[in-house]
Image (cartoon, rainbow, N blue to C red; front, top):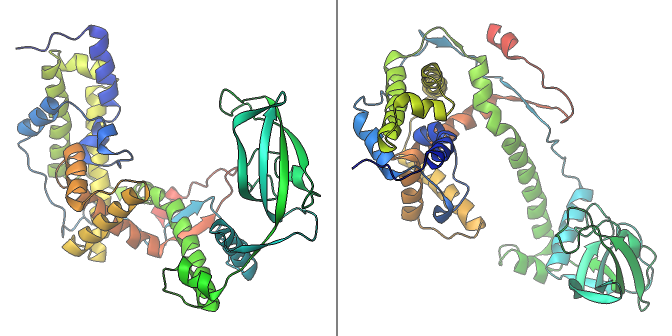
Length: 404
């Protein structure tokens, strides 16, 4: 029986929603950023029908000599970033370690002097509006740095405490930002505060052991570890800042003389069948589906070409570097995916993660993602990283590098 119970507006809306993510979902080029219960996928009848119609198997490019199709200088690739990697000095270690120690309560209080800019202090406070204390505006014990940009509090809250003294109540008047929650946005308030003292961080052997779950038993060994950790995080932040652009830059640099015809046929057939299935599901013509999705027959061909180019570039590098998908690569990537979700409060099992990704993106998505990351890592290891402030226009070097 035909699916004719939908209104025209509902069908159009559904098509627009589906087409906005259909190509990336279909071939697994995007990542899941929500738990399974929050993920909205295409109707099962659509995907099942599309898979059934696609009788062309995807050709493997593993080990295929692609030099007859393209040239690509992937080593010494220029990657730009607005992230400026810090050199981890003793000053930075002190500042970062102080924050950790104060957060976990490893500090003593100095009550002998008044508060100055840059101090970490412990306070209590109560906020009032029109003389009445308001919900959420009270704490018996809080720590903050006297720096409005770093404190995490409303502008003026921290700086208003400069000169405050232990044992004397201090009043600080502020105005909540316009983008604050609706009940407080743009409104003035007065905070009455008591300074408990200036926090003096204290890294003892006991604190080091507790902070590291017994791995480091002395203050010196923990401090050395912490410095190495900060340096590692700087490298990671730099990597994260340029990684999303690696494959885009590779495709810009590649000079492709002809497409791999079997791979192009696979992608075009898959995309075409996908929209044919949608048309059948919603009892519409293929032309109506494409029109409602803002697509044309030509744009389907362009999409197939784009996916073909992307795979060719990926395997050009993989084959040149001898990268082959293995269980070790997959398991490492799977563990990182599990860690990502655990850090966001979702304690999935490996089986649940595999089911979640494969049901949404298709069988084998995680393996493809793991392989792609491995190739990206190889390119990154050769790359030139150049700092470029956000306000600067990125330099177009693709033509020069391609001519190389």
